Length: 60
Image 1: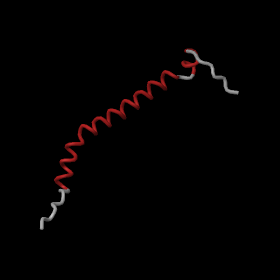
Image 2: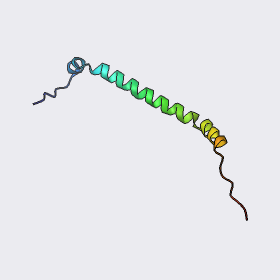
Image 3: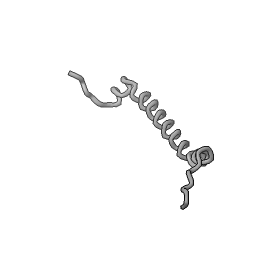
Image 4: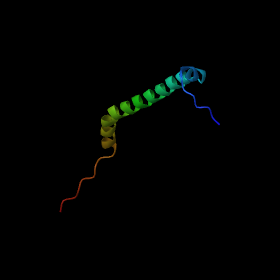
């Protein structure tokens, strides 16, 4: 059976702090990239609108 004891000694023995730091860094980097993409999206959409303009409806 698996021994599920808690405590600071078990966290340091399993390198929990290092794993936590790496995980937090990965999540921070991913959220930063998403934020930068959202901030740049209006400019990207303006460029797309120049390349692919909206079709003008024909008036009878």
